Image 1 (cartoon, rainbow, N blue to C red):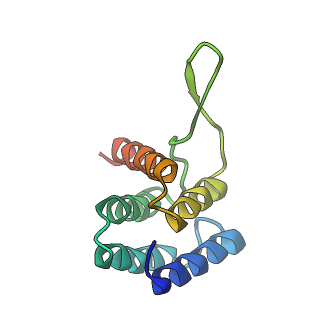
Image 2: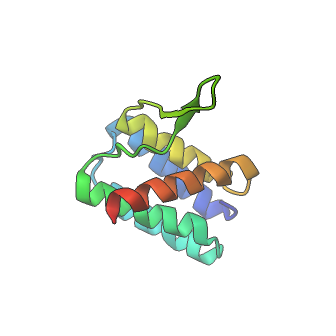
Image 3: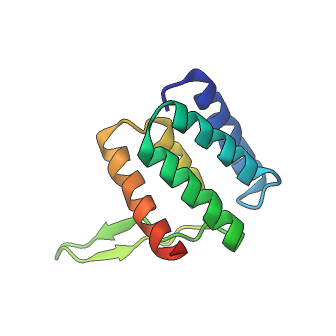
Length: 119
């Protein structure tokens, strides 16, 4: 994220998730607030993934989204098993540097996975 206030909000959210997990009180409201910064920054990918993330958290009280994959020597992809808290923390860490090319690709993977789960 580009705005200093957005990065501060993101840091606050990361600390909350580290301490309390994905069921932290007020987490959804914090993500909604962070989404407002993404709207200001005019970043549609981050705006969308934040909305999908808090919708998923609201609907499921978890963050067991299969968005990270590994590849074997033969090119076959398989999902990486990761617990909810670490999964959400990883997505949030990607958002810290959302303009990095590789991070954007992974954020897109989360967007796709969240859309498939929600709709």
